[in-house]
Length: 335
Ligand code: KG4
Ligand code: ZN
Image (cartoon, rainbow, N blue to C red):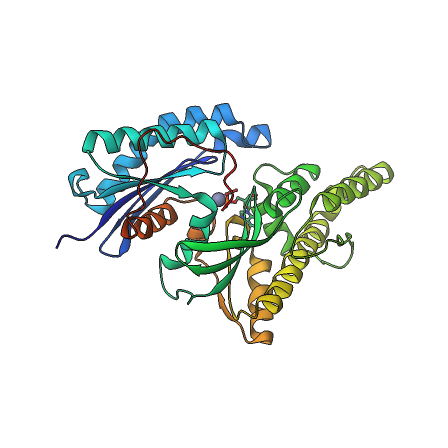
C-alpha cells in the first residue's frame, strides 16, 4: 500500500508555511517569514495577507520539491482554520480549498493551538498519553490535558494578554523591534534577574493574567526615564532579565499547580514562547525536582510552522475527519 501523504498549510499570522508528511515522517518544512512587520512594531493584518498571497505558491512548490513528492501522490490537504488573523487565514484556506478541488482530494481543517501540542509527535522523544501541555504563543496561553491525538481539553488559560504578547508588549515599551520575545531572551542572558522586580498577579484556579505586568513595566520604565533618559539603554540586560524572570515564574507556577491537580507526570511545553531559553531551562529543572517526564520541542517546531499542521492532518486523516469545501476560517477557535 502507498504511504499516506499529507500536505500541511499554515498562514494564521505572519509565517507562510507548507510541509509534506509521508512515510510516517515530515519530509519537508518550508517557512517564509515576513520581516516587513518589524518597522510597524507588530503584525499588520492587511500587509500580512498580501505577503501570504505572494509567498504561498513558491512555498508550496518548494515544500513539494524538497520532499521529492509529486502533487499526484498527495492523499489530503490539511490547513490551519484558526485561531488567527482572518485575512491571513483566508489566503491559506482558499489556497488549500482550490488545490484540493483541483486534485480531487479531501480537505482537513486543523486548530492551530492543537497543532502546537501535536508538534511533540513530529520527532522522538514523544510524550505518552495522558499528558499535560503548557501551550504558550503570541495570542494564547493554555494548560491542556491531552488524552489522545484528537482528544484534548483546556483546563486553564489567560484572562487577558498571552505570554508571548507580554514579551512583545514589554519589548515595545523598551523600544525593541517586533517580535520582542526572542530579543528579551537574548538580552536577558547577560542580565541580573533580581536587580529589578515586577509583580506577580493573583489569579485563582489555573488561569493566567499578564496585563497587570505589562502596566507595571510601563509605569516603571516611564518613571525611571524621567530621572534618567538613558535608563533603558544602560540597564537593558537587567530589565529584560527581570521581565523574563517574572513571565517564566508565572507560567511555571500554574504548570506545577496543574500537574498537582491532574496528577499527571508527563509534562510538555509548546508554542513560540517555549523557544525561550530560560523557560526551557527552568522547566527542565522543575521536572527533575518533581520526577516529571518532560518534553520540549525542537526550536523549529516551537514557533509557527506547517510541519505541525501536516502532523495533525495525518491524525485527522486516520480518523477520516474531513470537511466540505464551504468551510471558512475562524479568528477564535476554542476546543
Ligand atoms: O507560536 P508562535 O510562533 O505564533 C503564534 O501562534 O502566536 O508564537 C509567537 C510568540 C511571539 O509572541 C514571540 O515573541 C514569542 O512567541 N517568542 C518568544 C521566543 N521566541 C518566540 N518569546 C520569548 N522567548 C523566545 N525565545
Ligand atoms: Zn502559533
